Image 1 (tube, protein in one colour):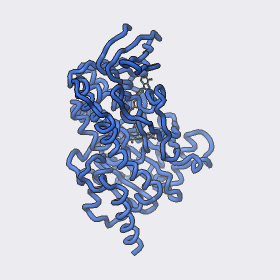
Image 2 (cartoon, rainbow, N blue to C red):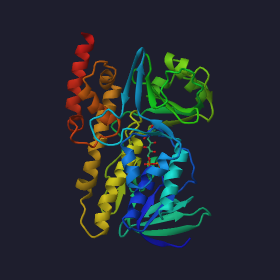
Image 3 (tube, protein in one colour):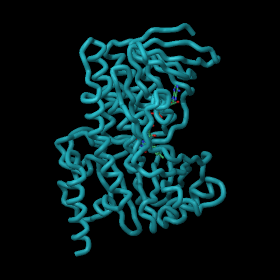
Image 4 (tube, helix red, strand yellow):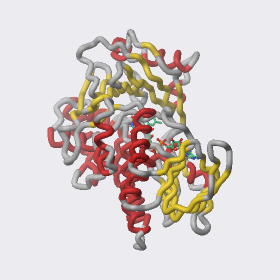
Length: 412
Ligand code: FAD
C-alpha cells in the first residue's frame, strides 16, 4: 500500500467512525477509515436509543437500518423484586423518533460500514494504526493486512476506536473515570421464553433482589435469541465460582423472575467478561484531532447510551470539522467538548443516581406525574442534549427534588 494524503483519517469503523465518515464524505472531504478488524466482528452494546435514529438518518443510512430485520424497540422495562415498570419511548417530552432497534452489533456495524462504502467512503479493513505524530500536520503509521507499513498524512485525525482508545494511549491523554470500576459478564442465549407477557420490544433491566447496585440486562433480538449480562462491582461478584458461564448462570438464578423467564434458555456463544470499562481523558479535541464516543469518555452501560453518545459526538465533530476544513476557526473546547459534555453529564447524573438508589426510587414509583415521566423518558430515550428539558439543564437539582417527593409519597 502506498502512502496517502487525505483531509481526515478516521481510526475505527464502528458506529461513530462509520457515521463520521459518511457525513464528511457528504460534505465533500477526502476521508479514509482504518479499521483493524475484519467485519462482521462481535461488539458489546446491542440496545440502541431512539435519539440515535436521527444521526443514522443524517448519514443517509436509515432505509438500510429499517430494512435489516432487527428487533423493534419502543422502550425500557425495569424490575426489582415484585415491582415492574415500563417507559414507552414514544411518550416523551423531546420531539424526535420514539422507537429504535435491538441489534447484533456484528451485523449492525457491518451494515453501517457497508452503507458508508456504498456512499463512496474508503474503509481499510485489517489495517491497524500503530502510531501517530501530531507535532506538525498529523501523520499516522499503519500496518496493512499483509503486515506492510505505510503512512497516512491527514489534516485532521478522528479517533473512533472505541475501547481501543488509540489516541488517548498514544498521546497520553488517559485520565481515570470518577465512577467505580465495575465488571460485566455476558453472552447470547437462545431464550425459549414462553411467557406471553414478556415484551420483546423493550430492554429488560432487572435489579438484583438484595444488592441494588447489581443489575442484569436482557435484550431480545429478532431471531429468538437474547443478549444477557450482569453488571456489578467485582467484590459483589467475587462469590461466584467456576467458568464464566457457571458464574453467569448462578447469578441469573439469584433473580427469581429472570430464573423463571429463562428456565429453558441455552447459551449459544462463549461467555465473555469486561472489567473497568469506565474511562476518561484530559482533552477531547484540538484543531488536530477529535475523540468520538468511547475513545473519549465512557460512563456506564446501564442506560444503553454508548452508541447514541458515539453517534452524537460524530455529528458534532463533523459539523465543526467541516468549518475548519473550509478555513474557519473552530474553538474545539467551546464548540465541541462543552456541548458534547452537556449530554454526557446528564447521563452521568442518572448513572450515579442509579447506583446510589435515588434514580431507582423514581423509576419504580408507580404514580409518577405524567409530565415528569415524559421528561425522564426523553433522557432514557437518549435526548440528553435537549436543554429545553429541565431534567437535562439542571439534572442533579431536579432529580433530587423528584427523589424526595417519590420517597415521601411512597412511604405515605
Ligand atoms: P466501537 O464500536 O468499539 O468501534 C471501534 C472500532 O475501532 C473497532 O471496530 C476496533 O476494531 C477499531 N480499532 C480499535 N483500535 C484500532 C487501531 N489501533 N487501529 C484501527 N482500528 C482500531 N451501548 C449502547 O448503545 N447500548 C448498549 O446496550 C450498551 N451496552 C454495553 C454493555 C457493556 C458491558 C459495555 C462495556 C458497553 C455497552 N455499550 C452499550 C457501549 C458500547 O459498547 C459503545 O459505546 C459503542 O460500541 C461505541 O461505539 P464506537 O463507534 O465509539 O466504538
